[in-house]
Image (tube, rainbow, N blue to C red; front, side, top):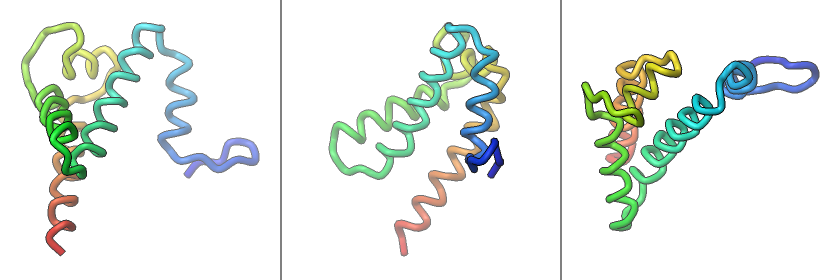
Length: 105
């Protein structure tokens, strides 16, 4: 956690506040798309409905599709934002593996 004035913020909140100010409107849109994809990946992976499973498969395919040069691809967005797509993928894989391991308990 990070102290900002009298408030305690999670690291991602602090990062979001300081980093977002430096982004162009286009980059902010890309960041929102990326954040939405991660949100869907995490929430839909736990749901059992057909719709959620389909959303999960779509976002999983978008995130893990490699070597694509399309303007709205996961890799392109990460590169434009200065993020390492493989690092994010690894984190999501680890998160999913932990989720699956915990569901076996």
